[in-house]
Amino acid sequence: MEDGPYKYTRDGNGRVSRVIRIGTRKSQLARIQTDSVADRLKELYPDVHLEIDPFIGFCSLQVV
Image (cartoon, rainbow, N blue to C red; front, top):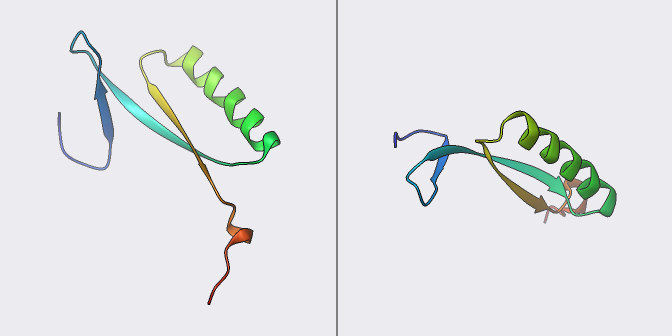
């Protein structure tokens, strides 16, 4: 697999697929919206592996 900014995964059969990481807030609504988009992406691009990465919203951060 080539180096670079992209992430790839290999399944048990040696088949390589691209990984797309989707960032989302941790709220229930945000997660529902993210799951909806992820489901649609899986329908359109079944060979792509999706990772959902919840994070704390920017407004929650404090600068000290």
